[in-house]
Length: 204
Figure 1 (tube, rainbow, N blue to C red):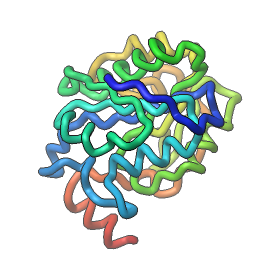
Figure 2 (cartoon, rainbow, N blue to C red):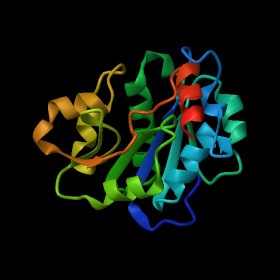
Figure 3 (cartoon, rainbow, N blue to C red):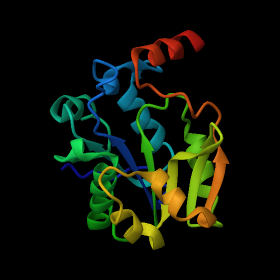
């Protein structure tokens, strides 16, 4: 685990956790190191998150952790290695949350995001952070709520109670009346396969 503070924390009550522990099995190579926006997928996600000004950006790594950690060393992000990454997204989500609670106890909300949504912008993250009327603020695309999504501290115990194979969508199902949403144009664009990546390149 590497702990780093964000030097430009305009939203010091919020932590951002980037879930990037997967093995990219459907891609056939590490999606975290694919090129987007003149950098890598993982570095782009971290930069977008840092520019939103959270107290900390924590990146949860798992598969190929050493290689991925080396690729982001120059960025002011904390690194959390989830040795149980193969058990599912929920285990990485909880590992990131534990890190935030241990090292940033004054945090009142955590925003979870994945690294492979190339249409994600800092402005969208700021829109999520700025919408405060409900305990969950989710992105809306493809007809339903999804990540990135922000959870207020009152729901941290429920996040810890998730199964290792469950993620943010389970929280939306458990607490539908506590979810507000922000439209995320092209949020459905992710990079799970080489066809996805080629389609993204073709749309640029």
